[in-house]
Structure formats: C-alpha cells, structure tokens
Image 1 (cartoon, rainbow, N blue to C red):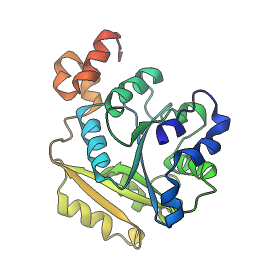
Image 2: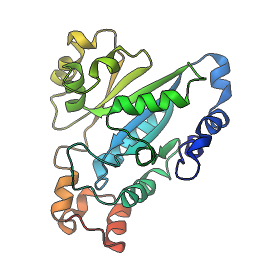
Image 3: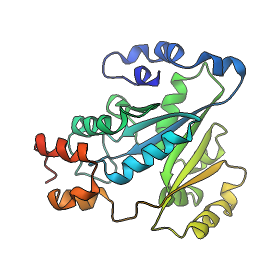
Amino acid sequence: MLRTLLRFDRVLFFYAFITAKSLNMNTWNSGRMQRWYLYGISANPPTNAHHEIIKRISEIGDGDLTVFPSYKHPIKNNLIDFDHRMNMLHLLCDPLERVYVSPLESEVEVKTTYDLITCLRSRMQLYEAITFVIVCDWFIMHDIVHLNRRHAEELLRSTDVEFCVVLNNSNDIDESKRDILEHPNSANKAISFIVIDTIDESVRSSNVRTDVNNARHLLPECVFEYIRENNVSFV
C-alpha cells in the first residue's frame, strides 16, 4: 500500500524498496497504466472544499491519491506548524480508501510541482508504466498552459504527467474548459475536469483563519475539533 510507501518520517533510504513491495504487481505485469493522483495543498487549515475534492478524486477509482501538504510556501509565510497540518489531513484522509498523506516536502526540498514529480520519478525508475495525475484548480491550470508557472513547459511535455482540474460554482464551466482545452499549449495533453457544485470561492482557508469560530461551517467537524482541542492559532 502507498500508505507505507509514503511514510518518510522514519527511514527515507528504504523508499525504493518499499515502493516495489507496495505497488500492485499485477498491474505492472499486465502492462496496464498505474495512475497516481497527486494533490499538493497548504492545508492551512484543510477546509470542506479540500475534503470534497479529496473524496471526489478517491471516488474516480482508477488510482491512488496522495496529498502533499506544503512544508514551506514560496508566497505564504503564515503557515501553521507542519505537524498540525499533517494531523488534520490524516483525520480527513485515513478513513478513505486509497487516499494517503505524505510528509515528503518536509524531508526533501520541493519548491514546485515539477520538483515533486522529479523526486517521485527518481524513486519509481524501475516502473515505466506509471502516470502522475496532478490535481489542481482552474487558476493553476490556466497559468500552466499560459506558461506562467515555473517548469510549465516541462510538465506539458512530459508524457507521464496528466492533469485533473477541479471546477466549482465560481467557474463558468463551459468557458473554463474552453480556455484550457483550446489553448495551443494543451494540444495532445490529457486534461480531465471534475465539477464540485457544493463548494465555491467562499470556502477558503483564509476565511477560516480570520475567525475560526464563526467559520466553523467551512470546516469538517474533525478539523474544527482538532483546532479547538489543540489550541491551534493562526495569528
């Protein structure tokens, strides 16, 4: 199981060995593509929106999903303790099938999505039949196809990288899809979309941090209770 694969906190040296033991070898032997969904978030704190996205991706059912909380962020300097964010994500993810939380970004230097993919590739080099599916919102995908993100060209050219774009009530669904799919840089690139109509831009971590008690409705109950019981401060 990838849960074992991604427990870097003890012995990172055994990553490659655990990988071989953890993956479904029947998948490799049959020649079918193994899909690995990667969802990088700050989780500062994880909200109902994060939870809905994680659940929806897990329901797709054609691959494992691993959530990678940011250890450091190139822009945000108000991240709460990494262990708190890991613990809250475990509360959300552990009850779900084939969903895992990885502390990788606290163990190795990862500044961009491309860095993450490169790191994972180096540990999966024995297996060529794997596709990394980057889970992102429309704004990130828009920046990538317009080459406004670091290593965007490399991600778009990579044959082992696909994208799953999350749309919500704040998006004009048809226009958002056209903006991505009709751009020349997205030609021949596998890009799928999921629409979650139960969330919108109001369900944001920043809205929670300003007043946790009044934003309780934006949080999964287990996350709110964790924040309260551990006196987590966002100041």
